Image (cartoon, rainbow, N blue to C red; front, side, top):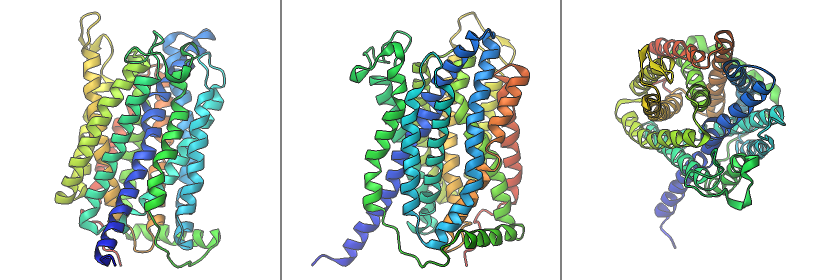
Length: 461
């Protein structure tokens, strides 16, 4: 007979590896579709479509960025309205895995749908709808998997577990991005980053290599979620109420208690603003490079690799710092770095950096933005990891999914705000660069509110 202690230890390790597998499997939607491949491709196609209608390039850039922000705004509103209710219902029924399966379907359908966007602008809105469906699937599956984190270890281990999970996710994202750049995404020459024709006989004239990002992301998710479903067994919990009405009642009770739970209330408010700014920075970083610096999709891809590699290393280190110092100082440091990055981005054009003129054709803006990409990846990854750890310190025993539903609500209640502010500011100023200004204010609001967050969270009854 096998040693039960060894068997139990093996099962526990497999659960952790299975949980990490989700980060590896799901990250390419954010890395490839939101930020570095599809987002910039969408912006470039939309700009060309608007210019074909007679708009100047500057105005067309602004309209393209506004349309991209609209898609994220609508998706964010849907996520904000549904996340806490679904989380409370999952806690009441004691089941999360069926919801992960359901929203994995959304992820796959949305990713596959990105293929339809043709380079002449055909099916622009349909592709935006497909992107929104996939984003909803990615965000909802994350809510349910995040709620499993408190079950994987005690409070002293959560920071490291969360950091390692994000590190694996970013490694998966950068590997997927490498594969897209080497084998599929074509540049203006019709060749990939290493000079190959797009694989599988994909037509570069129709940008099929770049459009393959959707099917590629779907296949990646389907394959690498297998370890999650094999090893991440959900502990059976008692069913308290199996009706949405009961879930709403429980959720309302939690919401009413928030003003009395000062630390949690302040943390949800703080994270609402800084995560909104971070997500908008992720969502518009690639499009900024295309619209302001006139980068190609391939250059944006290299930018993504720099950011993702930095993020993988930084989140691993950040997890260690979280374990030693706690998540609060890690969060504060990350926000300060991101504010500095935003200030640089807002003050930079191809011709100057904060009013200091550059020589014609200078590569300085490109170098600076690559550095910014590394800082965004590193600080952003650490911020997300430490935020997940901090939320675990505020989750009530037996209600982790509801807690992460509220966490998603706080992240999405104003998720429309970042993209909307960028969209409105861009539209009014007719400048994609100045459209990024509101993110600085959102980061500062998050920094102010975290003053009232207790470093150790709340004692769970």
